[in-house]
Amino acid sequence: MAIRVMLVDDQVLLRTGFRMVLAAQPDMEVVAEAGDGAEAIETLRSTAVDVVLMDVRMPRLDGVEATRRICAQPDAPKVLILTTFDLDEYAFSGLKAGASGFMLKDVPPAELLAAIRSVHSGDAVVAPSTTRRLLDRFSPMLPSGAGEPQHKDIAKLTEREREVMLLVAQGMSNGEIAARLVLSEATVKTHVGRILTKLNLRDRVQVVVLAYETGLVRAGGGGAV
Image (cartoon, rainbow, N blue to C red; front, side, top):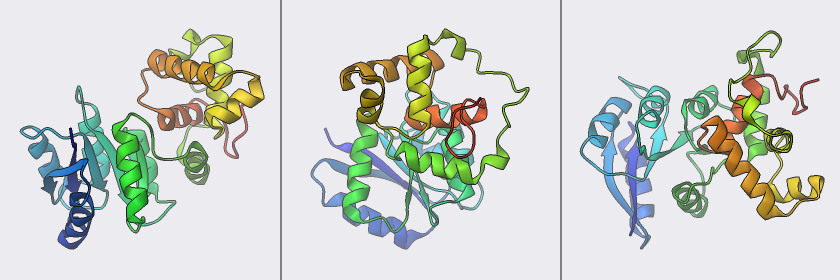
């Protein structure tokens, strides 16, 4: 079954370009378009979508708030934030709102297609190290960790799961974590899955965001002392 994609951008020419790229793929189909976040939310009420390509700077309702409302719904489609600049505060806000990643608007077509397929399969398309760099840039917007309450479910993690969570938040891949902890990649993947389930998180990107918000990881990528 083809991946059902929705394009949300107030620039018609950009939507046209993305649509042409996606239409050439046998496993993708553009099923809807919208010129702003409000129109996107309204369209999703009657159209089944798997992946939303979401611009951030739009009239009426911006992409960040639209992403927040979409991701709060049960069985919500995955959202990819589209930004103009790599370290855009809107991308930071979009990740916190529940997006599975962000991409630049001038991304090469092959990377865009790979990202859509990855998100559809359940992965986050932003490398944890890139997310960490984004969060380092905007760390003044986050709690310092001192005196901040821990996420109530972090206490549910085992010692090993907490260790894996810290390494995920520091930008390590499953392979790198496996090497560091002398585990198999399959075991690390299992730990990551349990962490997501226990903390009610969508993907690795949200693990990084949560680790910063709770002070488990500080700006610069180090674990909290």
